[in-house]
Image (tube, rainbow, N blue to C red; front, side, top):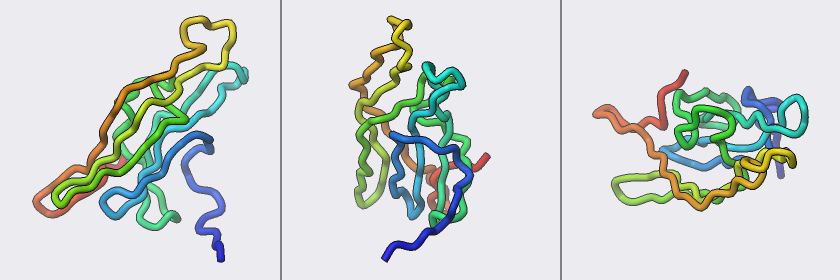
Length: 132
């Protein structure tokens, strides 16, 4: 049986994102959002975390160390790699296309890079990241 946990989370709606478990929390990042013209992108430069899927906190970290929305990926592959001493989120490739057919530079930006994001470790425990 499915049960709605929250009707509207505080993060902006988006397709092409991922939510993965890390250090007993959900971590949401990535995705696509068109800009107001409909041909450019306004991809969300944010990361969110939740322990229960109902209450979400915006993290200070940015996915892929993004400085602009053009740096944010969607349609990427992602996994959590866990060992006895460490866990990290890894992302593989992805799109950063603009869907602007008149932009020959950014129209077909498809990546084949690999990134890792891990929790911050303190003497008092593990946290996914600092909240904003």
